[in-house]
Image (cartoon, rainbow, N blue to C red; front, side, top):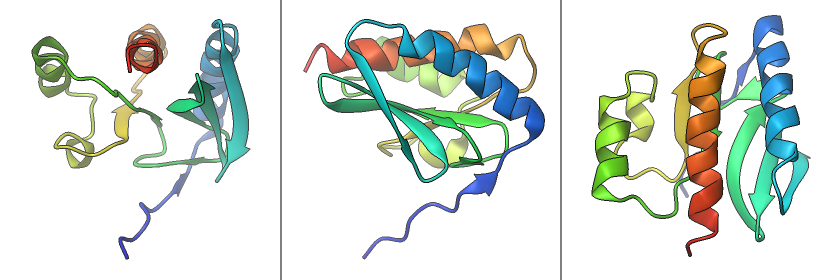
Length: 123
């Protein structure tokens, strides 16, 4: 049986950033959420597309996670080029972890979360 990824505690700063992201994502049409493993997990059309930390995160204390159900060649190139994407999740992992370094990365995170949200509508 594969082991679960280790969940790490997040900082107070990350709690604030995650709350801002959560407020935005929760406003998107057809989005539902539920608390799970110290995170808020978001769904569209019953498909999970994002995990925002409340107390725990997948990879680092400053990361959010998302799923892309369809990865075009262009999206794969964007993933490869983005230094904020955690290496451990780059290959063919289901969850993709994005590290946030400062407040400016919130806009960047929303772009990835939007791609994940839209990928749920294309399956």
